[in-house]
Image 1 (tube, rainbow, N blue to C red):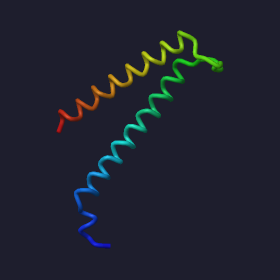
Image 2: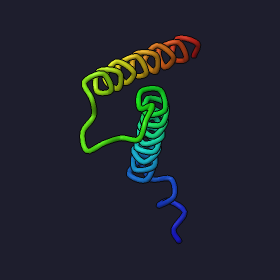
Image 3: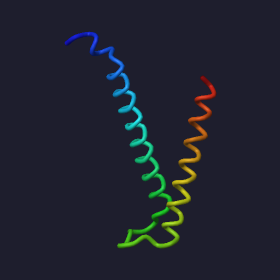
Image 4: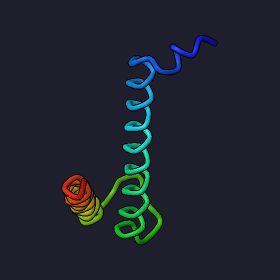
Length: 78
């Protein structure tokens, strides 16, 4: 393989985008798991109750807010 291909801007951009996708997927998986465990306390039925739905929404918002705060904190350290 041509070594210049390994150092191409296109490859670097592709790898960066894939890394970002993986991070987003990991965040969504953690959010889903944490909020599900916190908000769904019994066997789920065919629909979420209004309290479960509200809990999941609030949990997701708090999780995203905290993630943004943490990311900003790390960025300010650099």
